[in-house]
Length: 240
Image (spheres, rainbow, N blue to C red):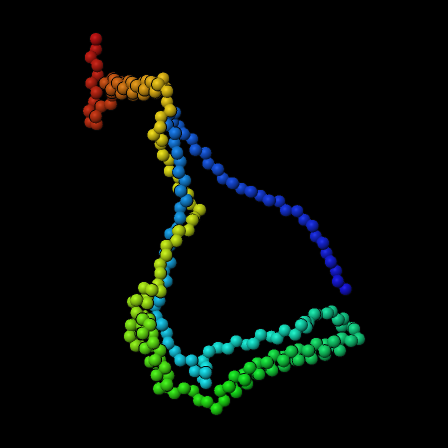
């Protein structure tokens, strides 16, 4: 028995944004705002550090062999529900256990067959002797020296090989940071009357500042606002 269910729902999308306003307080010159995205600079380097040499002995392998994948038979197991009071419950359980045993035997036979073929290829042979390994490494080092990869036999990577295979690159990655700079334009759009008005306003503000300065000087000379230094007493005005 199979059942199907259909569900229907609704979802709402939400969008958020941020905005800023730039205002130019000038009346004659325009202001240009330049937006710069801040980038993160990083350097990636690749360097040939060393060349490792080793002898791969097929008679004495030291590498790890992965288990073979399970063969595809085109048959899959689908679970089914069996009631505990069903008459064929025990029969179904027995067949399920037998199928598990059969699948395990097939997998073990495949692994055993691979191991048997690998051993049969090298049957009756012995691992390489130490002098043969040393001679093979000696020959490999000499070939690497001829190719310019090693500085000497049994040595390290040659500087020429490090220069040829090494590289360095600088990359810039954008970040969410933004830098804003304002620049005052040199062009002037003021009319002669507006320029004269601005000049008169500046003169007026200058005169107001001078007036305030004079008022402050007069208040300092007045008896009502003058303050005596510490330790001195102010003389009383003479009586008429």
